Image 1 (cartoon, rainbow, N blue to C red):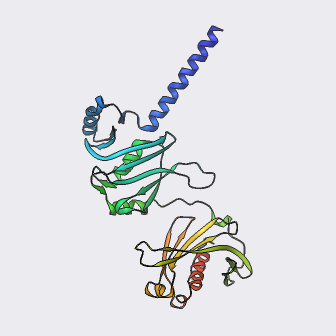
Image 2: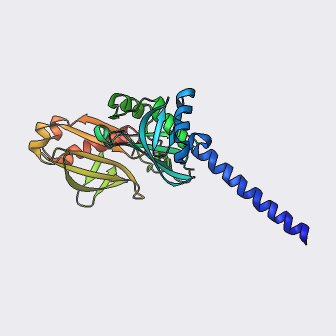
Length: 283
């Protein structure tokens, strides 16, 4: 009985140690410090080793303060925040699942300030230091904020991973048939085959100077396929004959001109966007 008790105790201790080591590995181990008395040592280590360390609430690189750092959540689902030394929020890094049934190995980098609305997606193991090194190695920040050109290059190199396979959601039909839009029922046909549905709304442009028509296009199972935006009124479409098509599959924004013949009525501009989605294999 005594031996059994000891065995169980040792097993418990081993489990505790294993978990502790695992969490240390996830966080970055000896390069993260929360002890005020060790703060100076960590800064010196960063300088001597030309490395990144996190001490208290600051990320240091080569011994110099690089950014204010904050971590939330827990080891397998951590959220990371970076602020410029001057205090402005710059980057938020959070777990991102690339699709149904997939493990969360990707992280989304959301940018603020001069790069608000921009995102990049990077696949890496959970590690606070790894996140910091990605920020540093890609030259995303200075002590006063983001570097827009480098952020743009980073986002371009790391687009959003595909969420689903549109080939499994598209309806079989004769691809040479004409696209037909039923505005009353919110349905999209190719020939006589229903290939999608849509809803129509509106939203103010970012500068609040005009109202945009916003169409949500869904597959027949109601999963979102794309979001389409263009000027809501004829005068807006003629003054700015452009539209944006955001495809949910890959997160890409395609910008194109609205043909002159399709500028008068919004449904014609919408049909042009649907033809684009069909031709490119999205719908």
